[in-house]
Length: 158
Image (cartoon, rainbow, N blue to C red; front, side, top):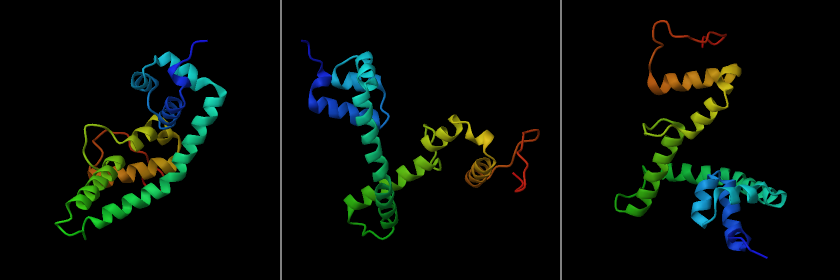
């Protein structure tokens, strides 16, 4: 009986963890030395699907702690001694990550949060979300609509 690299417990665990974080099957396959098709077949098995779901839940449960850690690092940047280079660097990186994720920092890549909202097309169907995104964009860009541009007009004026 032929064994796949995906049968090795350490590789199996790594692939499950990577799939739970949303990494592409192609990238995972290249990393562990199997084809994308093998990763796809592996990921579609019910037992593996349950492992992926459990790992994703562990990640979601860790989000509040991760947010709290980021908040602490960002807040500490202003109070850390100038000679504390390591913690200042960590705080700076945390600050940059928060600004990138929120779409405030101008980066070559779009904010994943904003992209997800737009891709889900919720902005066109949810008036509350439309108001929030409009207010956020107005705050961030300070720009006014161009003449002839469609403006959503509801009870809040957006």
